[in-house]
Image 1: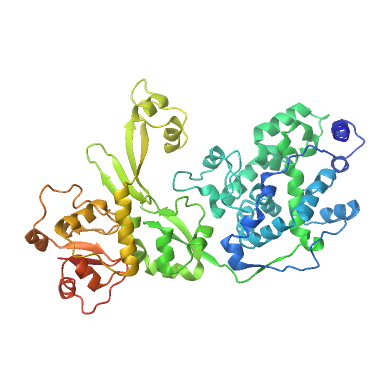
Image 2: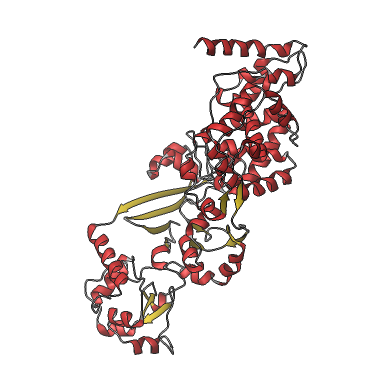
Length: 555
């Protein structure tokens, strides 16, 4: 306790030195000491969990040396020399705080550095391209080291998310999209573009990179307040070290940690930290998706591990690409881009009973309703528009529609107030647990398909039941049958009639089914009470070959 108090007093005494003319900024920064610095959350990253990352397991090889398990002893003079000779625009001064962070990375968190070196093979080129485009120093590419440990799915205790750890208001102010399906803070490309622009804006405010980096962590307002509290310093320009004691505790260690991260990612071989080698290059390309498609559909049809697709596209929170709303980017290994383009129809139709978004629109109210199957639950999402009347507020409108104020604000871009005549988007979500009977029926159908044993011949009532559940087989009147990506599988029989449908009615109205894994013509004939010959004749088939996602007429 006494040692900590002495260190603190020393820091306070040193911070007053800038008002004296006997020390330069560089000399001053080297004298700093502080025993109260707060370690960033990224340093607590679970390295064992990181090793389960699909990219690290499949694309990276660590060049581990049995004799390189310990760090080497370093003098202050050597560290000062290395920092001063790094090719950086941003000053990299040395002091006891910087050294403490260097020791954390090179000693206690060596394996974390090794894993980040592996991830850097993929992410650093993305960061560099974005920074170069904005004309800011390339060494800023090491900020995600201390922000997220290069994990695009990282979420801080405060809610900051992604590689660059943006909070929602900042991200939306930079044009990033955040909603229930999309979180572009997790998108390596878009978040890096936004981070580069934001850093450039901060530098234009403070005209000093150490202050801009501090402001990235705690916000420009806190840095401005710290500058005012520190005073004008007899007209001398202030930097991070001049306002150190006036910054939030979390920010005091931020610039020193950035210096340490830049150091360790440059000099890791000198510390016997294993380099990361590429097992094979990961060359990617992107394509615009204009349909609603699930990542698992892409994985199944193109035979790409879904884990790889998720690693390359972490912005899709529910593994859906809502291309039916607007075009969205899909990143794939470059060799698979052409395969995707020629297989779009097959991908959209693959296992459509499970992944299709069933959408209905009420022409009178403009209410849009979508229903999706989420395992044990049926989730209904309703979207409608409300025109603000005189005297209404966000709170009163939210209460009237039974939604939370926060969700109403989020659905409308984070607005804080409304005015008369304004149109508001109202989104309500209902989650209903399936009955035991529904779950049992679905499991029975899955079991039957798994062993290739189709159920006994279906009656008319059973056929209608399958239409109503809408879980495994999609059956629609031929007249109303449409492609799922242009119009959802509408309800041919949304309510069961009081009288069974006659055989004559059934024979006059062909049904359309979607082929799923395990289906054969023989099994389908038995399931729907017909013959293989009739199915082939009705569909103009010359052989017995069928494929997953194909639509067949059944009579």
